[in-house]
Image (cartoon, rainbow, N blue to C red):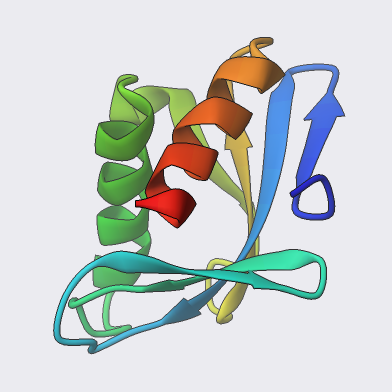
Length: 100
């Protein structure tokens, strides 16, 4: 699981690949050095970016203002910056989702 999660000075980087317009919001699983996710919102006017931030905020149990899209706002390949230093907690939450 370490390929898509990386500690940074300001928090934790999460590299993802987004599939918009899916039937439900879900994590598919690791794909190379990215975590593949599906979101129901379309990639129009930032809707998928907003849904992405909300999805991970709910999943990780943190405020959505602590998650920013650091790279890839107009791409399916994104790098999220999660402003926390608790890498183990993020790993644990993602592992729960992937196993369940």
